[in-house]
Every structure is written in C-alpha cells, then in structure tokens.
Length: 113
Ligand SMILES: [Zn+2]
Image 1 (cartoon, protein in one colour):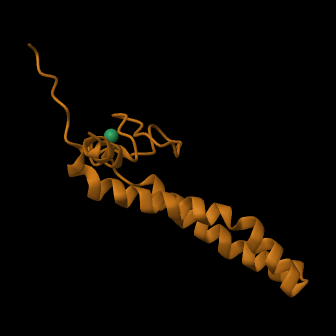
Image 2 (cartoon, rainbow, N blue to C red; image 1 turned 120 degrees about the vertical axis):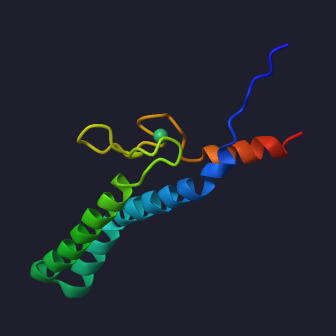
C-alpha cells in the first residue's frame, strides 16, 4: 500500500505570519481611507487641510503596498504576491500555490479526531 506523504506546513508559520501581518497592514490602510477623509473634512472644513491628510494616507498606502509586495514565500523563496511586474494581493503564492493560512489549516485539521 502506498503511503501519501503530507508536507509539514508548520515550518512555514514564521514566514506566513509575517506575510499576514504585512497584508493586514496594507488592507487596513486601504480601509481607513473613507473614514479618515470624512473625519478630516468634518474637523477642518478645509479642502487644503484634507489634501494634506490625503498625502499622508497615500504615503502609507505606498509604503504598505511595497512591504506587502516584497514579502517572500517561505516555501519557494520567491515574491508571494508578484509574478512579473504587477502585484496581485491574492491569498495564494503566485509561484507555488501555498495558501496564506496553510499552516493554520493544517494545525486545525490535525487537532480534529
Ligand atoms: Zn511560493
């Protein structure tokens, strides 16, 4: 009888959690756009001041997108979100197909009887 070998994904936990943190920061920065601009317009009543807030927000988007895009896959060592020139922030590695929560899923499946 052939025994199917299952890859131990727990060794990727450190790399995947780093990627998850970078992705979380990126999506968080994107999501605060509308509340931040709304709050800025409410508090300052000034387009000029809100444009400064927008510039700061844009700087954060730029930094967080670069951080997220340069995250390397712990399994294949290539850029997790970039294949070619355009970054795609999908939940799987664009090279080897490793899922962003593969380590958690395997841990949860092991704990089930
Ligand atoms: Zn990979």
